[in-house]
Length: 287
Image (cartoon, one colour):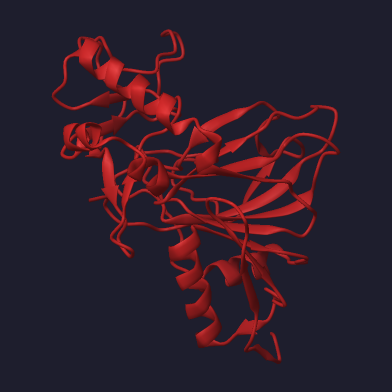
C-alpha cells in the first residue's frame, strides 16, 4: 500500500482544441482529495488528461481509475470490446499481440459504448509498448463541433434521437452500412435511442453525439433525409480544428471524457508491437 499521499500536481493546458498535461504525479500513490477534485475539474473543462511517465501494475491502474468513478459493466445483451457472457473484463489489453484487442488497422472517430443504455463516462488508456511509427490517437472536441454548426442546423437537430447499432451484434453476412435504411430487416440486438445533441451531465454544454462511421438510424426520419443529414454532420465533424493528435510515449496514461469527445487511431505496422491497457468507467443515461 502507498505510504504517502500526493498533495500537489502541475496541470498545464496544451495548445490544442482540448487536452491538458498532468505532471508531478505518481499514479501509484494515494492522492489527496483536493488533487482529485482539481483533476476532475480539468477533465470537465479540457476533456482529456495526459499523465506522463507512469509505471503501474494492473491493480495500480485500476485503483487510480476508481478515483474517478465506478467501473463500466455491460450487460450480456449489449456486449462491448472483450465481452464474454457473464464476465466483464476490468483491465482490457488494447494490443495487437498476446491475446489483445483492436488489431493494427485504422479505427475511425467514435465514442465508446454508444449502443448501450448507459454508455461509459470515460476511459483511461495506459501505454506499455509503442510502435516506432503510426498508432497515434486523435481526440475530437464534440462541443466545439456542435458550437460551430449554423443556427439552422442546430434547430433542426435539437430534439432528434439517434440509434447507434452494436457493431459486436451485427449480421456478418449482411453488407456493412453507415445507416439502417432497410427497416424491414429484423433487428438482432436491443436498441437504445440517445439524443443526437447530448447535454454534458457536469458542464451542461451541448455536444454532437455522433460517430464517424458506425451504423446509425435517426428516429422518425425517412431514409433519404436521414442519410443526407448524417453525412452532412459527419463531414462537419471531420475537421482538424476540432481535434488533438497524441503521439504516445511509454508510460503515458490518457484519461478522456467519453461524453465530450470522439477518438480515432491511426493504423500501424502489424510487425510491430503496440500494447496498452484500458479501464472504462460507468456513465449515465444520455440526455
